Image 1: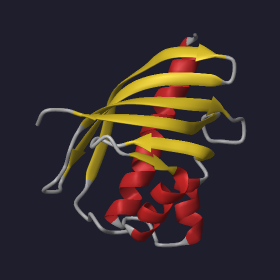
Image 2 (image 1 turned 180 degrees about the horizontal axis):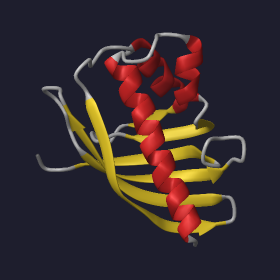
Image 3 (image 1 turned 45 degrees about the vertical axis):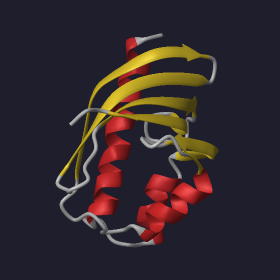
Length: 137
């Protein structure tokens, strides 16, 4: 593992959450091109385990997010404490804290992300899997 890989993970985590915040808050236009910035960051096989324990496939996640543009105008999302757990071949695993604010149901979480190396992406990483664990408020 290298400092460069950890930096890339931290930068990608921050970038994608800024994109997500912009989409859900409505700060970016509701266009296919803007949505693609988020969608193209995820592998076709992407899965998410939510804070409620549900496992969702990429298509279901993308359909829900596509329809949720502007649904949380006051939403704020920040990330911190990104740490590279391991890097082996094409796969990197990182943990981070995701802090939500501005909505009545804002739930912060501790996350574990699995990335695939992808040279055609902003930080050379594509999201393959995300596990979210809720934090006490």
